[in-house]
Length: 137
Image 1: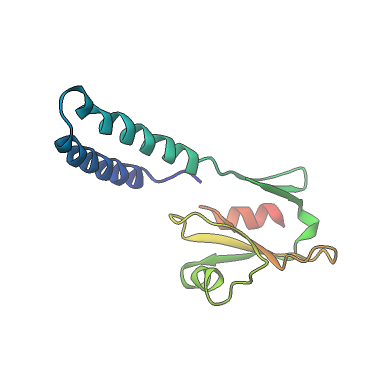
Image 2: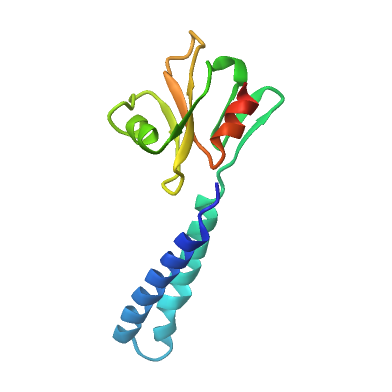
């Protein structure tokens, strides 16, 4: 779930404009400090937001920060566009486990069928929800 290149480029433009504005207030060697701080900060931020991973391996769903056996879930539901917006907004449950990045427009909703777990569902953002749903089935 990597950050799209155009998001990184946009963030770099904003960082460069902010650094140029800050440069005007500084003199001498201190004028490069805004560039030396903001540009690497954008690159590190993009790398940090791109660290998420979703995979199914040996009957276990691995999502950055969590994992669960595939048998803990009911049939997966592929969500796109309006359906995803509804599950992120008005239909959202406060106890749901959600991992969706803002640049993703698709996700898979997995109802939790384990009676010992009070989480109603997992909502997992992915670029290929059909492949994830097939791997879970």
